Length: 237
Image 1 (cartoon, rainbow, N blue to C red):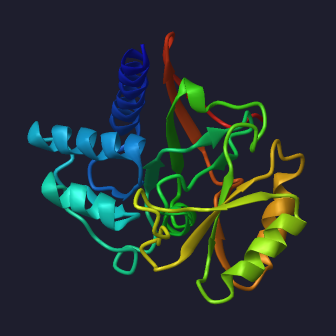
Image 2 (cartoon, rainbow, N blue to C red):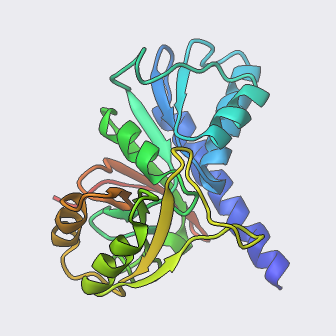
């Protein structure tokens, strides 16, 4: 049963990714490529279209070393944000999606680069399976907070003062998880967050906190797949 559920989730992710690539990637674009299991389907869908002779002049900006490696393996041409400081669209996954299309990201550990690329994009498309939908951010997923190694325990205490239950992210062997920038990630379980904007402002103002997984007022489109098929949503209003 668990294997069946995992296969179904993977199918939904792939369906959402393929639909998003077909809808939002067009010839000549400069595009952001996200990080994580859902975003990997985006890279594979782009590579598949290139194999059919489509989107050959699209250039991607990867949000992590892992995505860069996958893109190079699949012969997807890449550029950098320095060479292309404004991107047409970024397609990425999310860990939790609220009704207004605010999201929590960073489960793959690339939250800082993902936010930099998202902020440089004219359009930000989130692809997700239906299980990622949530009535309120923080209900099902902690907020990843990227911190400098210097003085990181002081950030732990600061985050606890904001009401978080803090878990330092570790690798399978128990060693600290380090981001591509060499920083630590503290996963912060706040429970359902009443005012995400206020929390984001507190995190943004803290020295030593270099990024967090609250992506607010950035997402322009959601492509979500589930038992009823693939659906495109935009923020309400």
